[in-house]
Length: 487
Image 1 (tube, one colour):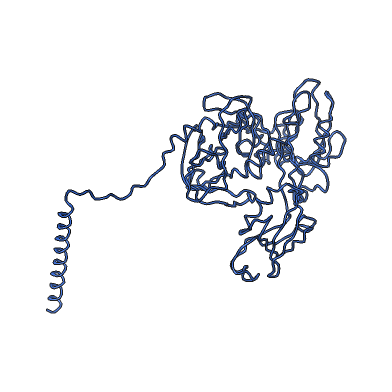
Image 2 (cartoon, rainbow, N blue to C red):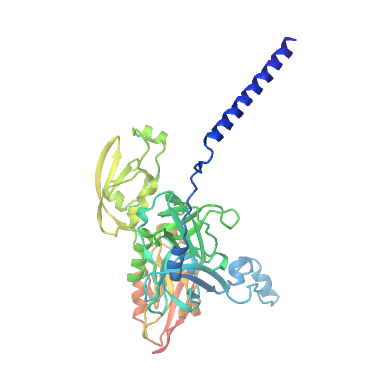
């Protein structure tokens, strides 16, 4: 009975409380009758229509054609020297070619940076292209020339023969802040003039294999076809080049990455001036300083880049950098994370002297280093921009790195063929991945020397090229066009 009485009392109490609450609410409503109650502040979403209308004419669609890969490159077992090659030769049957009919097509985006037709896009958009077509917002189409490209930064520069073109305004990506609105314009899935918006999610992102680019991370919807397109701030200035997405499905999953303009435009200027990119090099391998490592090295908190390896003979070794040093400053700029250092070094002109601030055995020291050139940076597109009666090989080559020499079994000399465009070298059978060992009877030392050998060729000459391919070497016959011809 006591339990029943207690329950009844509780119900009565709750009912009384509810009645009192209702009476107070009624009284409040009566007191405020005729008065407007302020609404909750609305979330203000920017209107980007004026921005898009202002800048979209300077955004272009980049269409790429590549020759279909032969069956031997896609199915090595069908190569004449492959496991089934002997079978086909024995029975006199031609090796089957399953190459798809016609050229392989790709697409991307880009933006015009000068009224006379210079256009910026991603290197991976035009990589290996046989033909690049630029389509403007007014539906005009132009065949573009590849001025140059840089794989390390994924930036490429194109040129079309046009004048008085609309251009973008280049902004300063260093002023970006996390949470700031940004807009991407491009051709996702080939849907031209598509605008998407979002915010800057993070800055200075270092992605695997891209240690020289401090990416801008955004939540802007970026998809295949957006690559190479501009990322605008709310003032309509380009602050990045849309380059990569994080995806498990091949489509947008809420995270995208753009190359900052302060990195990209440095590359563009070098490509425009020399056709190649010089990138500084110290010659160290670094790792992040964790909390445990910080304590073991006597630091109060994690900071800097921990040196785990120093390349023998490198600028770092000559400057006195040792394994176990923690680099906390470069040329007066603080190094808080291991990812802070590579972009700074890469942006330094080889040969310049810079100061390194390191912590060694708990003490801070200052070292002076003469920055070197990143190995393998001697990439040159041979005669790609030369006019008149000069030879056009249309090859992209690079000096071999020590690791490439070990992997390819080349002790000294030689240059690596990275891209082959239409021209006499392609007709001779030069392929990406070949190592050119001799050219016209001369041993090839490096990319710069090969360029000089090509420049001195006489019209109508037959040239033998010795290349290393896979595990063997072979000569290829190259015919220089007669006077006035174009290769």
